[in-house]
Image (spheres, rainbow, N blue to C red):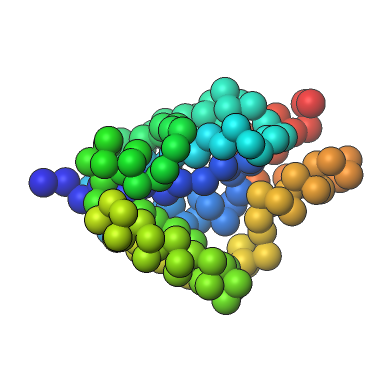
Amino acid sequence: MMNIAVFPGSFDPITNGHLDLIRRAIPLFDKIIVAIGVNDQKKSLYSLEQRLSWLEEIFSEDDSISVGNYHGLTVHYCQEVGAKYLLRGLRNTTDYNYEQSISQANSIVGGVETVFLISNPQYSHISSSIVRAIVKGNADASTFVPAVVASTLQSS
């Protein structure tokens, strides 16, 4: 049986912090599915197609990472793809407090365990929300995102 983890998020856009967590988690799992959770109630800055394209390009060389998307509960997606683990990053105690409750609910509802990785200090200040604010303010966000994302931001 494979140890499969889902790393869920909006990835609007994916950041260097996300990328660092995923790369550090590779030795822990046989397969990691980087999955965009689609919430129709939220307005994304980038289309689902653009975000999937970024993820597919970033991880195209790594057979242990696949890309997906889903609607609904993350635990239901985990069950659908055979994942027993969720991968989550923690930047600070606020993240921990938020993620702890969700982790406990996911365990009860879907039998999914959450594995937390602490952000490396050089990435702990980065979030997709901050990157979106920088982009909306017409400033350079290239130091916060992978090169493929930065090149797209510069051309738009």
